[in-house]
Image 1 (tube, one colour):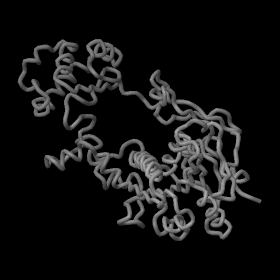
Image 2: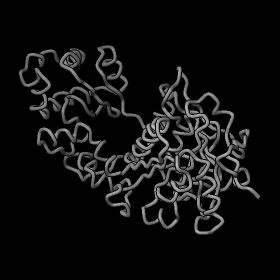
Image 3: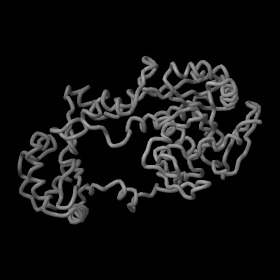
Image 4: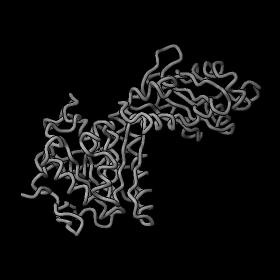
Length: 394
């Protein structure tokens, strides 16, 4: 168990737990009340906790839904729960009871930041909406992560819905196959990160203002922002993006190719790199072919170029190709499995947190290094209600 300090001051009566491990981290001393569930909100607060904030995670007596999102399971919890809840003090409150709401008010009065992702009607019913919480703490930063933002506050939104409605699935998958979602909850993850950025901006703004601040991050807005160049292809050029498998809509050859024993990707982003690719593959004669002289020309003749390259690449193993292309300084990479990626020499930000009952629990650390070092985990995700006695008064 990490050492506990009461962190008491004139703002509250309940003790606010803090960890000595936060000393010296960028957000040391910032208090975050996490009322969120599932992924976007918990990921946001986990990033803030990695940065040094003291986060109290409040769950209903039944717990965060992700505790049951399995198999697979670890230590009787779905492993999904371990994704976004490290470095937090975990308590349970029944916000449907008077006692639960009174304890919540005391926590809110002491907090710097509250993060929640309830639909607006539920937030109002539980009195965790902005107006209710700002009345208890006039300097509060309140982050709401919602499906569709304040224009449709009661509309439920989930990652797969946003990927479908927001155009992400329209550009994911092969041209002759059905739309597919990205293999991880990309809009949830990005919403959590945007939420953390919003909180950091609000903390900076609070140095110049005494007013409460409400931040709203909508999954649908996030999904549109992730379209990036695909959005610009439509907004500025009127080009409707389509599914292209592993290929890039604006650059080629830049995508997935079959090798003798697996798959390799090429990431040829310039004419010079393309020339080196041709030399490495002993196809220098194609350098004089007008169909492939420039990126625009290669885009116009994408399928012809793909067939020519594929006919060569499929003759060698991925290791042979990687060695050949590395020597020629052609950007490329073998397509790894998830397990291979996590166990690879490049996986520097795979670490662990110590669980009080189960020992070391491996985690993927937040990929930010300060002065060359990651902010390593100091507490495993809490068991349900693990820290009730730390926070609650008798």
